Length: 398
Image (tube, rainbow, N blue to C red):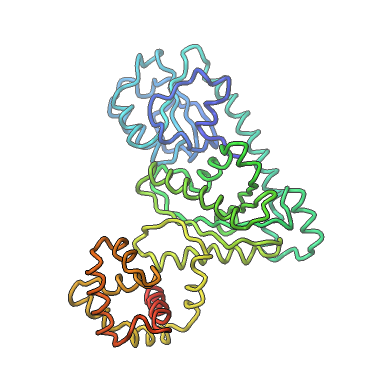
């Protein structure tokens, strides 16, 4: 449970605090709060919420802009100013810079003492920290399982059931890998916020645990879900909403999410973790241009098997099967390989291939004829489609 700026503003005692700018950063996490009485920002810590009267920069327009910029760079949670004491209004330059950086700029009512707010926030943060520490202590069982430190099935099952984990219910492991731009809230915190904000009907069907093991790991489990497919669909939908939300809010964000296959039984967690990590690794190889951000191991299982074959063996196979059309594409800036892959993935349907490639049906027929000529194969022959699709997958992994 994290205290974000947005959650803090929903507290009854803060309902008079107004967001002036930087709404994009309302999901920044508040780790600490302090009153600012000096223009020096070198001491600021990540996640700190600053309360001020604005006296330290009241007459300096450049200092106001620099202040916002520096606070955002240091990962500050936000800047709350008690206006009408030294600043009659928020300077437009501060508002513009806060919007640009996504740093929440808040207005504190004139009648509210800063010391009262400091006490209130500190009390709330301490409570959140105590809850989080208790959760971390309880979640230690997950780390013990993933480390292989507890192999007593009866003991593990008992501990997991105390956490609400159904030892015979299906679950999925999710792993997040990211490179955050300045000011972005970590993806796992965005996901946790999204999960906590789900409506009650969804929460009734889904449990989740957020743990740290070599990075952020999320475990999803369906409640009363007998169908593994139902769990997959629900998790994929949630992750899709998350990816869309982050891409919209942080366009320069680079992150990848790996999903394991559905697992049952506590000692399958390590296997699920490895699958989720492999999904990211394989997805990055197969999609080097990062057109996707979410990778499901179930769709890459064959690629994982191919990836375990020695590279020299794969290289020779690709050379013997695809070299003529690879060379043709290179010399002519052609799309024979892409056409072949799309045709094979479309189960040999011309209309579907043309639609996916945005070309005429006759263009596809011409390209396929050229492919058969260069490779000296008949695409309708029994084993040829499988062999060529296998070779294309190998080429991508190489």
